[in-house]
Image (tube, rainbow, N blue to C red; front, side, top):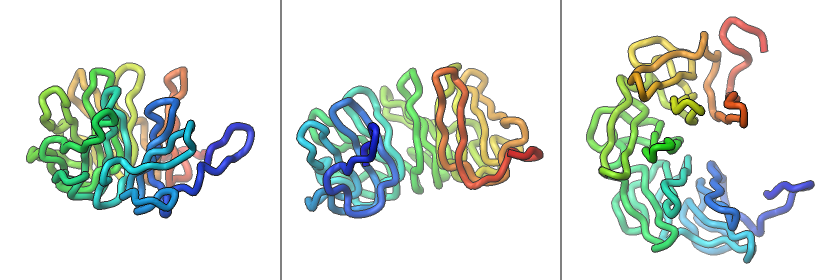
Length: 239
């Protein structure tokens, strides 16, 4: 639903759960989830809504499994992250990019060997993905990895995470924050949220962490970030 001063239904929406939303431009939104129809038409797990025509449309032939996360890669590509093997007619292991100008899908290298759950694009253009996987592009990568669109290659981020990340964001200083069901970052014990410095190539904790899984992250104009999830308080504190 769309909220201005009140909620408005966005046409008959996807016929199933929506796990992720993306607003790549003021003209519309992209929805990804676990559905096969949008506004009664075929739309396999991902669809686009136009504010001007008030209609849903498919992104090519879609993908063949649920979408859990979405990101914009450059000005023309939408990245779908999830649990699938095909994007359109292209083999794509759990992650793929759709070109809005050409209406075609492409794989991101050799993809991931498990579900991609969330991702974020750095200001330098690389895509960071987290989820339930242990290899990215054939390279060992524990639950988090970086894709470089310029070279079409994947790299690990240190020793990775001890558990799946469920949310990610980039701080104003360029560092990465990952939240999830995480018991370790690199070789250090952690509690569900951690920070990675690309400059130093190291992971660190946020204080004592949180006492339950982090499912979403947000940031305000001042650079402060907010974590939401299945927890009652920061470890050792009352919330």
